Image (cartoon, rainbow, N blue to C red; front, side, top):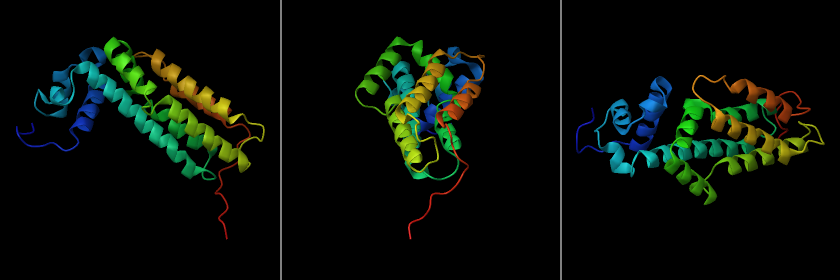
Length: 205
């Protein structure tokens, strides 16, 4: 265990990662502040030193993972014309399911105070599903300009359909439910109609 009085680098991420392991191994019912700090191998009061309580911790965990995926979606702009359109979309769409995303989302929904905090943060502009949708729509529009998806593709609607489906699967999943990745895979193929083979965009000369 980390000694008292010694600063722990990136303690919040350490606690978040520990919570994900507890959830994956033992389920939502096992998530307590003590279980998290024990898994993180740090002092018992460390979670409460950085968060007002478990509800705030759960909310901040969800918001952090949403923000990570929003950042990944924003990076799609650098992938325009590179690799496969479906593969690029798949990486973003499945990112929220990594590290127990459905379990984390389900946990937040069972804690009204955490769910309220998440909703208020998103309404105030915290990066989340709206940011992810916008980045995907821009990426698809750019790929359409290059002719890598169908010219008539409605990129705004395709982005909405993809993000809305991921949101639905996250918020309605439960431990032991069928793996949602297969459904996401099918939708990704629909979201890239007429996608051509992987190819690099031509370089300017």
